[in-house]
Image 1 (tube, rainbow, N blue to C red):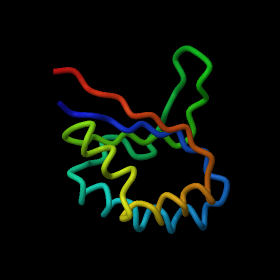
Image 2: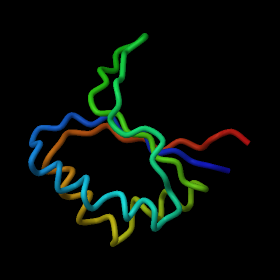
Image 3: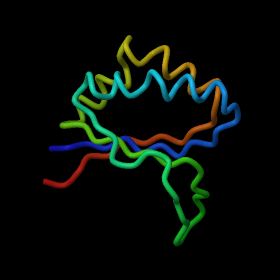
Image 4: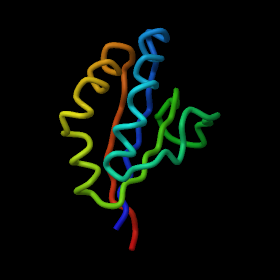
Length: 96
C-alpha cells in the first residue's frame, strides 16, 4: 500500500534551500518515491494550517518511506533543508 510524506515548508534561506532542491530528488527516486506536489499554489480552505511551500511525496509503502527518511542517503539533504527552512512533516499510509 502506498504511503505519502507531506511537507509544509517555510523557506527561510532561499539560496541554501536551492542546494537542497538540487540533491533531494535523487534520494527520493532511489527509494522508489516520486513527487506528486512540489511547491505549486496552495490555498487554505479550512483549519489552522498556513500552507507555504507544500510538497507531497509518494512511496510504494510505509517501509520504503521510512527507509528513505532514515537513510544515510537523505541525511545530508535533510540537514540542508533543516538549516534553510522550517518544516512540518508527516507520514501517512494511503488507502488500499
